[in-house]
Image (cartoon, rainbow, N blue to C red; front, side, top):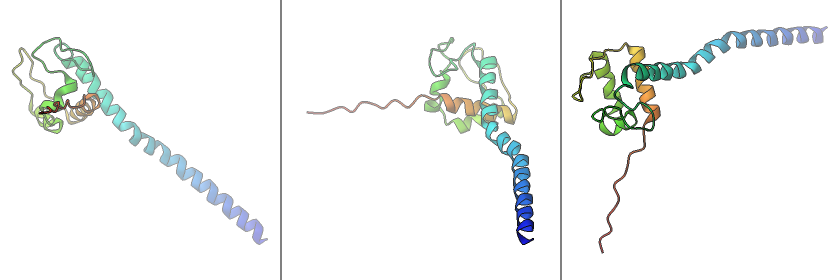
Length: 130
């Protein structure tokens, strides 16, 4: 009789673990997809608001020669510092750029997108003196 009780208890335990796992899986999956959603928001923002002047991908030249390529922004500015500018309204001196103000989730997405496309910093060649 003890074996039957043990088996029943193990069966209930197994069902409980499966139930808990099935309830937790969507929560865990949502957390994993959050960076992806953030990145997509940033890419869409860049395509919608920035691509007419800036090169927004890893390669290519900006349509407006005075507008920096997004892939090299980290060489000019700490990307985290851009978050404040995006929230307060960014104004720059490269022509007729409209003033933008973004919501916190949009800023997070844009910064995530910018981080994903940064080119490695170019290093100066060392000169050999003979």
